Amino acid sequence: MESPLYRLRDIPHEERPRERMMRYGAGALSHAELLAILLRTGTHQESAIHVAQKILSKAGEIRGLVDLSLDELMEIKGIGEAKAIQLLAGIEIGRRLARSTRRETLIIRSPKDAADIVMDQLRYLNKEHFICLFLNTKNHLLGQETLSMGSLNASIVHPREVFRAAMKCSSASIVCAHNHPSGDPSPSPEDIQITKRLSEAGAIIGIDVLDHLIIGDGRFVSLKEEGLM
Image (cartoon, rainbow, N blue to C red; front, side, top):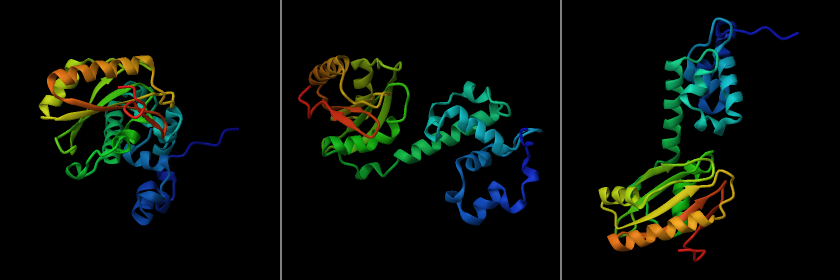
């Protein structure tokens, strides 16, 4: 026999997520409790924590939250449009915080420097995303932009979009990066082909393509270091 569901008011006051966070700090809360705070309320039959647990179940694991769409969240009972948007906003803030830093102090001296900037942003995605890092003449990071989101195993990017974005930042050079959702960063023939195409276009325009990084799960490959560009 299944245990009865409980609502938030059935939980002792001192054990509710908000009160536990105030007393012990956010680090003491479970994933479900943190999501429950964002949700604020559950349904007539289920507490916010139960709804949060269903979200985590749908995501598969905590890092799977970044891949849930608005429609997928709204398929969960107790999640309407407003709550789904609220959750997506919270997830996006977390992603931006994870990759934020004082950009004026960032200098790209090696492939690892560039990989460190994009690794956590790219490694968990289940579709290919193509990113460019824009650098000045001293290799200081000016900014970055996602220029393409491809299918599970193909990323479509055109030199026109890449260098238009680079010129908007007054970039002297760029570093390209994209992820392999499989977790294996080994470059494909298509990766090598687009890299050569971008390098040739950059030489004509006067914006150097310094490297193209393939990001896997905690690993990366530099096409520059591999002699593939």
